[in-house]
Length: 176
Image (tube, rainbow, N blue to C red):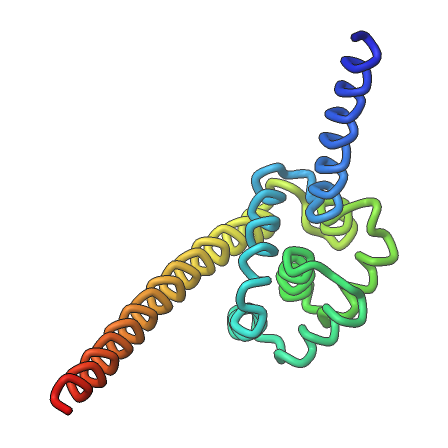
């Protein structure tokens, strides 16, 4: 009995540890709310990567190709790419430079990197990064809802069209 309880406790501990490590790898700014927003951005961007790149390009005024290259070259998550682009805008450097520096010092996290680049936690620039993350996460959520609503409408239209076609074909059969 004790062996079973110990084994179950170990499995639960390992599962929690693994999920904590996965979360820590996705976002590490030193600010739990911002980390949470970056995880949401990452999840929602996976549903519409092209829309994410386009919006990020328009919002931060970087060429879309530069942002895509940084993601591919440095294997960043969408949340990390969002931070790299926002930070690059604040310090007036290319996205690739910020992404390279982040990858080189990834264990330190975004908060430490931002501080080393002159953006201190609690500063207006950091608060603006956080506000941009919030508005982007909110925008992406609204886009996802709209996309889901449109898919539902399209599905209903297709069902009605199929039903109408089926009724017409049954009506023709009855007439013959």
